[in-house]
Amino acid sequence: MVRAAVVVALLCFSLFSFAQLDKIVIPAGTPEDKALAEISNEQDAQKKVAMYEDFVQKFSGNPAAVAYGNWQIAQSYQTDGNLEKALSYGDKALAAVPTNLDILVSQTNIAQQMKSNAKVMEYATRGGKAYNSVAQTPKPEGMTDELFAQRVAEAKESNKSSYEFLETAAFNTIADEKDAKTRMNYIERFTPAFPASRFDEPVTQYAIYTLGQLNDSARLFSYGEKALAANPNSMPTMLLLANTYVEDTRPASWAKAITYSQKVIELAKADAPDADRSRKLSGGVAHSTLGYAYAKQEKAAAAIPELKTAAALLKGQDDVAYATALYRLGWAYAKTNRTAEARAVLEEAVKIPGPLQGPCRELLAKVNASRTAKPK
Image (cartoon, rainbow, N blue to C red; front, side, top):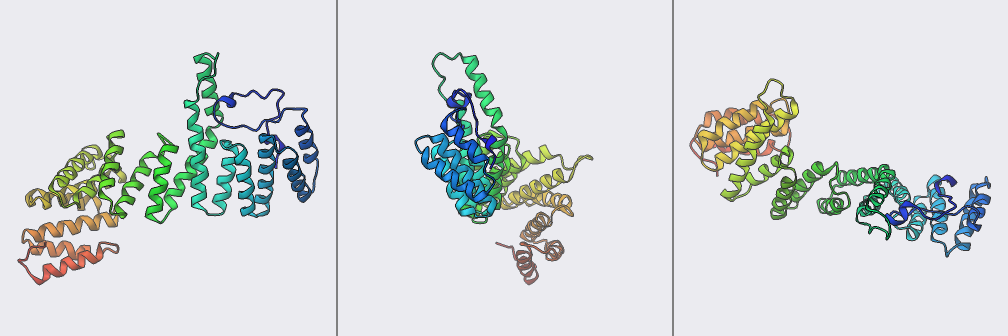
């Protein structure tokens, strides 16, 4: 509990007063200021908490005093490990100054200690919305456009570190959440709270993956297409969309899978001498999806070379992606009655531990059962 956290000023005017970011201001020389000086001299932690309780009651008509007193009590309980009480008093502080980023950061920190994803997201997104509301604040009468723009920029710059902490906390909550429905709810709250976020691309990937888990293809395609319109050269987004389209039953979706896969192949340049693992992986997955789409279109002559290229690029890079390419290649071979080649590919695929091992065994069993049967 540090008294420096409160702004003690002779004048209550502050650039934040019009910028929608509450700051706690206790003018110097006021009864509140004198009471805080007395509290700060108390060394016993329990007595200090009691004094802050009295302070809040005595100055209950002053939102700044109420917020500061409750915030200090919250920090005391946090230090003692009583996180439930810390959060409760922090909420009382926020009731007085709802858009104070310092308190929202404190509450987010407490919620993280409690491992409460719901509370972390609540405080973090509240802070994100408050920070971004600065630009929409009406200009005070009599203030020039230039001065107003300067004050807004100063307000945002001075609160940038708090905003970035909240943004990171919200993103980590999305990444940590195991329940797909809850994760999607967090994503939908993150996007308006942190527009043009540095985490936009991974959040988009989480959204597409999550909507896939929820079997909500309509929302998935809509979300992915909007994200791609905002970032047309995002290879991760194109790869996720292409892989989702190729699993659809409609030929029009296969055509989209082909378009996005071809663009990724063009961007990744996976066969270039300087291609790193990331580019090889992106290119390999794109070739795999492209080949699978061709196979679904009954274009085996085009499908098999793509899938062979995919397998070559993905071997040693990613076991799941490599096994997927082998499964699809075995499926394409079997579909064209090239059973010996299908068997060889699938026998390699079943040795790779992971989610494709079962499907590869099943397909291999079908190939072994009939040299002429085409898989359906």
